Amino acid sequence: MTLTDVTVTPFDPAAAPPEQRLAVGRLNVDVFAWAYPAEPPLSAEKQALALTHLTPGERAEHVVVWDGGQAAGWGSLSYDTQQNTHLAHARLVVHPQRRRRGLGRALAAALQELARRETRRTLTFVTSDRHPGGEPFARLLGAQPALPMRQSRLQLSAVDPDLVAQWLSRPAGEPYRLHLWDGPIPEEELERVADLMMVMNSAPKGELEMDDWRITAETIRGWQENAAQSGERDLLIAVEDVRSGELVGYTDVSWAPERAAIVHQGSTAVRPEARGQGLGKWLKALMLDHLAKNAPEARVIQTNNAEENAAMLGINVALGFKPWVAITEWQLRLK
Image 1: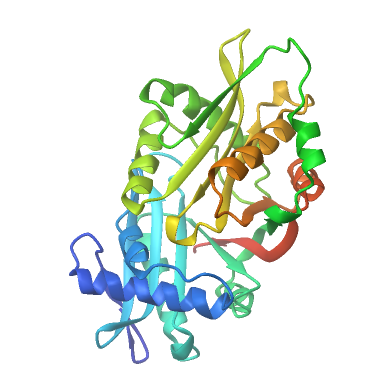
Image 2: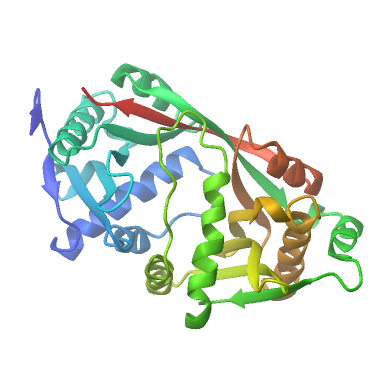
């Protein structure tokens, strides 16, 4: 596949020589360092490993622009074979020193060709204001902004301990109990946790033409296997309503040992019928308390929120989260 003199080559991470996977890993490390020069560096080895990670039902196609043994640009197209079969999610990066030479356009054209081959009608992808060329490129492709998001950070040293103590305080005799899994979720709990996680389907989708996602025990097993291979540490706290035995809310975070100062907040969600009782605040406070006692190297928590998700933004702002990066999820309808 070519655009002018740019050659885009299909790339299979699972079958490729280790040095080629590592070259793509180094490309992602270099792009991250350019956009976030003050941040702890990513691991090229782990970025290479992540290229091979898939969840049950997921497929991925990769393309690379090679410059000798170096990856000058890389793109991927991931999609589910069982649900949201009209969608595919794209990623595309070009080395900062190779930009404005047509590599991005050539990679984008290759990814769109792959999407059409798989009969995917809509592509989604993300840009951030740390990559100022991302939005103009998205508009050049004809994409539409579908979901504006705020990436925020909380300095743990600035957390108000009195506020956390207030949120940890619960009424006596209330019908809730906690489950805390610092590591893999027990096998016997996977079905209940998967059912709970689907509450995230109620989160704002903006203009994204996306059906609800189905999460299964197999899905979580896949996530946990990928995390174990990467050496990632995961923490999930869930609230159970003892009257029904149903899990009604959860929060989860993760971090990498080599970048232990930065904790990534996954989701915090409560079933609609259990909202209005402070369970989201309780879960957030429990997570902060656990990190303070068990993750002494943690300095920052980073999270993404849709700008229209007022409830969760309100909790995060009250805790002291500050906007850090503006992110947009885009949607491109293929012709």
